[in-house]
Amino acid sequence: MREELHYTAENKEAKLVGRVPCVVQLPFQDYLDEHISDRKEYNIALAEFGLPWVDKIFKECDPDVFMGTGIEGLVNHPVIKEKGFHASGDTLLGNPAFASFSDPRGMFDIYSCIPLVMVVDTEQAKGRSEPKAFSDLLSGEFENSIAFPDDGHMFDGIILTYIHQVAGDEGIRRLRKNICAIVHPSQMIKPGGIEGEKPYIYLMPWIFGEIKARQKGMKLIWFSDGAPILPLVVTSKSNPEAERIMSILCRKEAGRIFREKGFFPSNITGVDNALPGSLRFVGWEYIYDPSLPEIIQRCKKIMTEEK
Image (cartoon, rainbow, N blue to C red; front, side):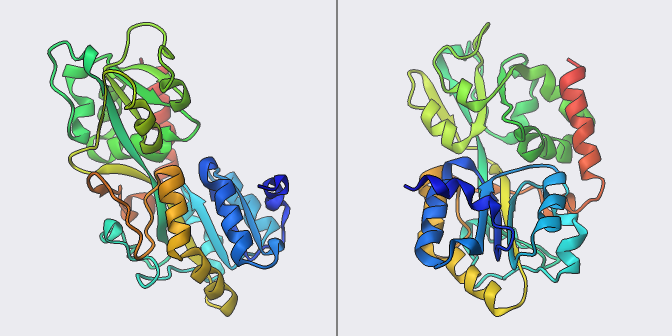
């Protein structure tokens, strides 16, 4: 694998600009090298969150296809509409696992996603039931028993937005009472990686959950009402270059990279995601709400200041 793959983000003239999770960045770049003859045509780097990175991208680049992870305001960026970006529809991106997640405004497709799962330490059950549904995270039965993932974006990317949607600010406060540790998922998967009383429930992305569940006494639980997802979205212009790039992005080979290398289910038609259960999406109406960035900041404040 060539080290210079790390530097594709310097391509300011790229036709494809994307920000993807770290675990799939290099294999995805390798795939693009095989199918796009000129490396200068694409600009792929690690996922970024918030809005400043989107502003920077469109000041520096004028891509035909744009991919980004996150939901905190990206979909409302004015350049997306001004430049004529739109969804591709379900011909290329029509996996059954994502069948109910189509954007009613026709602006974006979900390309892939990061699902959230639970892992329980059966040795810490202490007579308590196993959590099953997403709402169980707010149960008083699990007070001071949950390890919460903080990797710089999980706060806003998955958990807080979904909790706020169903239970508002009070739901965030109830969740906070149940949290005993806030650590990066890479720390969670280390035996003894969390100091103090051991958590009963670990919240983490699916890829980390699979690793944690291999340890003694650990059991992976897929939410019975669907695993909440952090979507990786894609949007493209209407021109031959965009169509060519989208056809490359939406081959089953590309989808399998995300699913097999990162446990990131693919929306590409024909990819077998082999999911243990259904996926759950917070919804386009919610993430198109222009007040969402403010809601997220308020939720973060509750999580960090009101313990």
